[in-house]
Length: 145
Image (tube, rainbow, N blue to C red; front, side, top):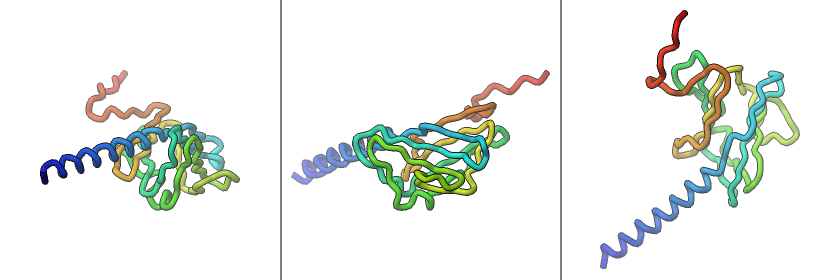
């Protein structure tokens, strides 16, 4: 009888975490503006049917000269924040009337990869532009002419 209860708990936990992952998977990096510098922003979008608590989420970036991802917007900025279903979440460098987070150190350049991570450190979405790549050791070396 105890084994049956354990199996039931495992099934319940599996269903719960599957649902949580589905909610997280609906958050995307919707838009990025890098110029002019004072008007930089990142916009997230929740295409899901439920509000998502962003506490302990964070955003990292990798530059063309960087060998790894570094912090762009830390967990402390997302504490107590959430994004409603079918709604936007704006992170801006300077004050904008609809900004959810104003972060004066929002550093974005012509070649970046931005990744959004949830509280479990899973990459939820990633976007890149310019000459930066994200293939790690699997990239072919750049030809030198």
